[in-house]
Amino acid sequence: QSVLTQPPSASGTPGQRVTISCSGSSSNIGSNAVTWYQKVPGTAPKLLIYSNDHRPSGVPDRFSGSKSGTSASLAISGIQSEDETDYYCAVWDTNLNVWLFGGGTQLTVL
Amino acid sequence: EVQLVESGGGLVQPGGSLKLSCVASGLDLGDDWMDWVRQAPGKGLEWVANIKQDGSKRYYVASVRGRFTISLDNAKKSVYLQMNSLTGEDTATYYCARGAGGGWFWDSWGQGTLVTVSS
Image (cartoon, rainbow over all chains, first blue to last red; front, side):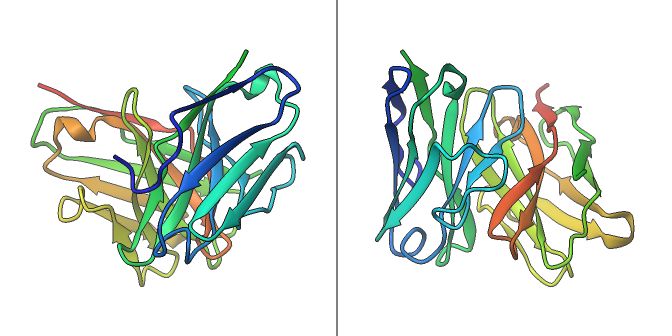
């Protein structure tokens, strides 16, 4: 059971907007910046969002992040078949002095 | 081009030891951190340890504290993970990653090295 809670799965049809949530507590999301990673099986994780809502160069602008209180969200607008993979939130926990990952969300493009 | 290359994975018996290495090229580590993240087969990502570039701070996930040691050699632009008293639960692909922005996000990753703990 992860300290950060993500839905295990999400789905949508091509072109739809999908949102993946990440719920934590005051010592992690409530205190520090949230990051999001895309993980394709057999490859290294890829940074999608940092500092809650910043997108690195090269990441399509249909990926966006937000944070409110102790929860964060990753939104993917106009999903494409290539987006079908796993997504993880991550944040530093100030009390535990560890990085936490959410359990991961498997996105299915129907 | 930024590149991180891990090595040192393999098959080891329970209770054994292994040392992973990660060599960085094409980047100036500056104020960054270096981290190790792992993924067990069929499981999610798990952060393992990190170290500040000057070596002054290092942190570990509870499950490896006292068994794993992270270290670095700035001259060689390398970070290491010494793993002792390995168990089956340590079986995973281990990735090294650069903690950019003062360690607040991982923008560069290695390709991963597989560690299998089995008799």
